[in-house]
Image (tube, rainbow, N blue to C red; front, side, top):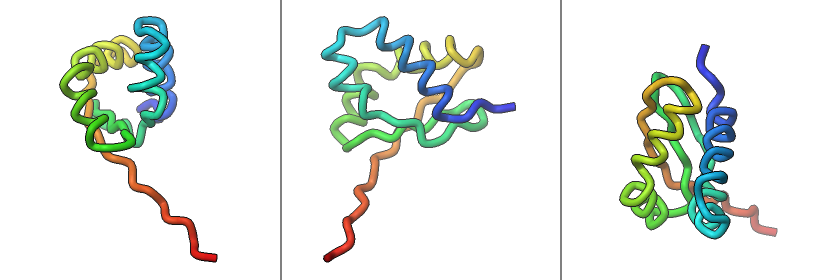
Length: 90
């Protein structure tokens, strides 16, 4: 049975929190959410395209390793940019 995305990501975040400085964790990982985890791949929702590029360029291998450690299997990491939900007009 597959673990829910939120549970997998919460476990990975705990490992990352212990590995990274508080500032780095807060800046790059605190606002990342798991959107989906299925078939050995996790989709992480990031706030914007700059964050996506930065995480891919600087933390992709670390994310893959931490997720493999927490799930016990190789995990492909994908990113999706969060879409803003518009507030209804008054």
